[in-house]
Amino acid sequence: MIGQAIIVLVVVGFLMIAAEVFVPGLVLGTLGGLCLIGAVVLCYVSYGALLGTVAFASLAVLSILGFFLWLRLFPHTPLGKKMMLNKSLASRNSLPTSNLIGETGEAVTPLRPAGTAIIHGRRMDVVAESGLIESGEKITVVSQEGIRIVVRLLA
Image 1 (cartoon, rainbow, N blue to C red):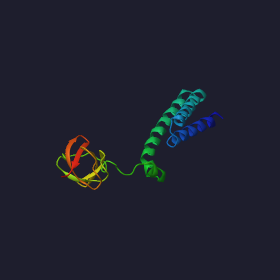
Image 2: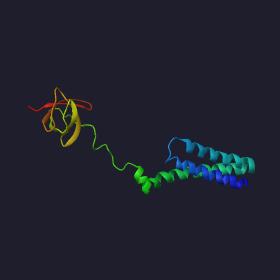
Image 3: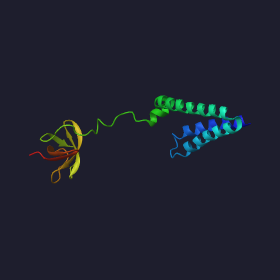
Image 4: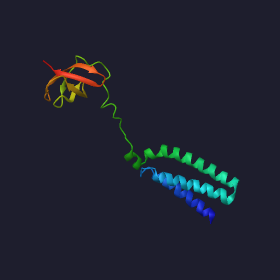
């Protein structure tokens, strides 16, 4: 009877910890951890120090192996593929890496004063130096301070 309770606590504990991936909030994970601790305590009380220590060590090893197995296999499952980001967004919205002062481009959106322009074939967030610049107008970069690119209408 006690052995069955220990097994049930271990199984329920691991299932609750696994369910934490899908139901965030640490509630299920905490309850699952408490079930595992309860199983170890029950094993210590019922079967003595030796079997309690064996149960604790076994659960610790199973938990660590299960965690690394989960990290290794889950991203390759159909559900994991749906939950994981496949592409890096850095290439599309990367920061300008070189000095762009004097470079020309074209406004993609109206710049009033902020908007988007294409410079060197890359879409970049820019700010008009003064006034409104309509989309499709040719622009030139007049200053660059970190990620802030200031442009003016090409004369």
